[in-house]
Length: 319
Ligand SMILES: [Fe+2]
Ligand SMILES: [Fe+2]
Image (tube, rainbow, N blue to C red; front, top):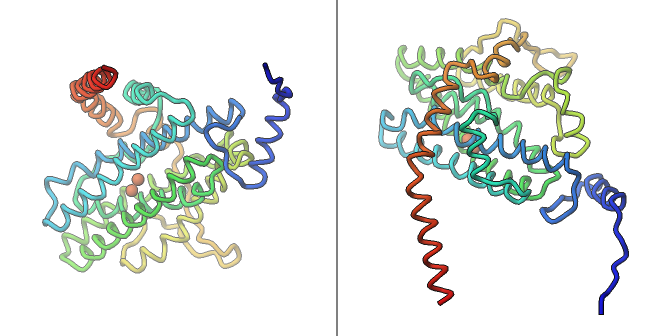
């Protein structure tokens, strides 16, 4: 006997999707979703995962040269957390039907992007502090609203990731506080690192709203909850008092409190630099991708061995 199901039309499915999003409920992997939503989610999660993995490189560069066992242990833990974030996020992308080897291939062939901030070099140990304070700080501003993103697996991954990011930011701030209480040379290292990372940190929020054509769609789908400019302003407002507490001057003569707006005003961002770095012309783009590609190729034997073991084990179970 065959049971005839009432036909569910695409319109009903779309209506259900729209209502779920409008009610602030989550879209789950087995739910119907528009192809545009699926593609946007895969692209965003993959770029996020790639950023976590590539982001291990600039700081990993200092693990062997950390100035004390304590600093080495903190930095190791932090870089390891970033690997975990990447793995979480690749898994979240897989729930949408993305293929993990394909995503890796897109990264190492330069077809998929990662955050432009990781294309800048780390020139001193103060950079470890500044990356924790500013780069992880900017990541927190971006990611806390993503805990309420409409795609369930992404939103849930973000909750744990944000908890770890807040440790990352604090370890950076604590390192900088220690250096600022140290020698003149240490304070100079901090000043130099802040000067190099301040503007690229502001660029992490992406192009200005007027130049961000996908924002409206992502906001309507509740993938994004705030625009790039809103998040950038939030980051500036949060960071200025922290800079004052540290005793460092942010490299922007136009930075000042605007009582009428209730926010800090800040200077114009060099968007041509962001475009240049995104298009592959940043100081370390080629190096970062080449390193990732080498690590992937060096790991080929591990993947082969694991696959051979799994196949053998499967055979043994069947027999
Ligand atoms: Fe992270
Ligand atoms: Fe982090």
